[in-house]
Length: 233
View (cartoon, rainbow, N blue to C red):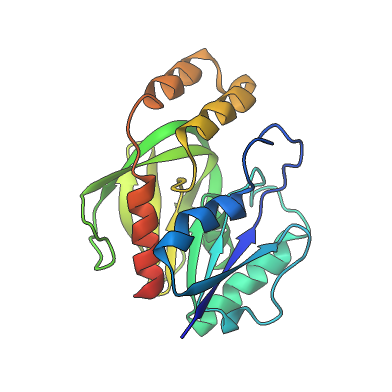
């Protein structure tokens, strides 16, 4: 039987600097679709208010990243937070990436704060191995571009891994919520272009650090498999 996955696009940047690339919802769909052949994937523009009337009818929901921040409220975010609370109550599989990771925490009672920017590639050291982490490896390096971090988790959440500069880059709640601060759906070329875009906010030292990191390996495909396994578990 065909299952259904909803991906909520939360990115508010329409300036066009990344025009050669698809939006974050499409990037996420391109990552997951080959790994979820039995799923029908629907895309929703959450910023435009396009959300499913009954999100709990989906077998899973993924919230994308965004240049927006939960610490700078915008009207469209309230509907997303409402959906997060409803999905949690119904125990529908829910995955948050970057902004989505932070939005889940914010909606359910945790906190998000400004932090030193992370741009480039960040390795997560896995501290609590889960059955869906297959193929297994104890550290996953993922592309990143973030200026905020989760500080405290809501009740019943657990930290799955950490990074020297980010104590909660990976978390879960029960069998139905997974959040990751970093980006398995991004490519090296995209983050290189992103680095150019945010360079004025970084300074030369962080720019050089990002450029050096972007010469390395990332595990986006592996983590995409982990997300697919989590959704199907």
